[in-house]
Picture 1 (cartoon, protein in one colour):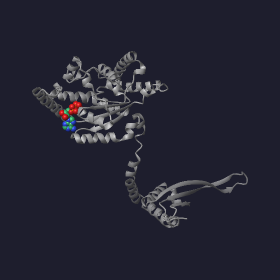
Picture 2 (spheres, protein in one colour; picture 1 turned 180 degrees about the vertical axis):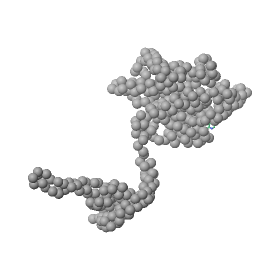
Picture 3 (cartoon, protein in one colour; picture 1 turned 180 degrees about the horizontal axis):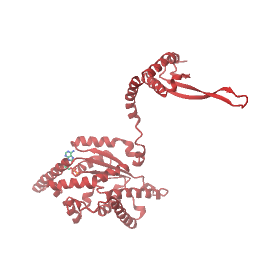
Picture 4 (tube, helix red, strand yellow; picture 1 turned 90 degrees about the vertical axis):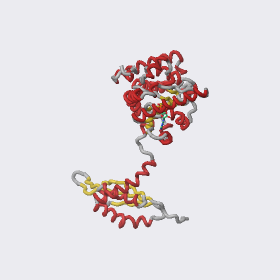
Length: 399
Ligand SMILES: Nc1ncnc2c1ncn2[C@@H]1O[C@H](COP(=O)(O)OP(=O)(O)O)[C@@H](O)[C@H]1O
């Protein structure tokens, strides 16, 4: 068996989901029984840092904590898994069993220091872990509901999960793992010589390009897709990490700066995120207006001219008379406007010239004939266009 296959997850996604359910239920039941439901107090905010080996998770964790004002230490999953068995699996570039990871992690998260926030480095790594994470979120919501009308409600706040994915490609990942190996070796040599400082972990995969490549491929095959699938559910930050550290950190700040995405529950945010921000609309509106007007000139030159003539001849004299108030209402039955494009042109021309125009269409039935025998009244529809034009009125003082 190749080292990348030592992980315990089967490759059939349905089986993995079923597996996840079994694993999660087992671990959750265990906690529930041992610790008690009212003590299942998990962090309000979870920041899950993912990325290929060498993508800079360790390097940027402290920075992310600083940006988000988090004082608790990051939870580094690989450090959490320090049993001799787990060490052997890690040294081969493989992964430790999902159940062990989940059990250790949930217990760690219950520590009071993580009550507000926890940053996780290296979870979730597999489809099973991803599924467990979703179940964990759902359980937190259930607990919140269960305790909502009790004196303990403040321990069960609305959870917020964020996925931060640091992206680097294969060659960068390998180069950085090997660099980390060289740095650790140099550092440890110095510590040994001087007797000052602490020894760093020397990972076997950081010294052998083949093992480093294997770690990257394990990530690409088992973890990357699983992490991306969380995009649909939790708030998701994709960071280009293939750049000097200062630029990566700028990318992180830019991603995390967008406050409403951090403050709102990610599911709420996700429901609304497609509605553009007002600033974005304003930024694009001018360019779109110009494009539309140029389009009318090419596609409907006669209609455009007719609208311009109407504005010039019929509307401007009235608008000028109302220049002080900045508000003019004009009613017209002009047949030109039976074509909706003409109305669009009219509104866009006014916008371009610095006015704000809107058009209401009123359809009235006008009696035309009365049938003496049947008593029926025949009508014709009269369309009245009410054009409201607003602009900044004169600054002349009134009264
Ligand atoms: N943006 C970067 N540019 C260059 N080297 C980096 C960058 N980010 C991290 N490194 C280096 O890459 C190596 C691996 O980074 P690390 O944070 O340990 O990765 P991870 O925790 O994602 O495996 C370290 O030697 C680190 O100094």
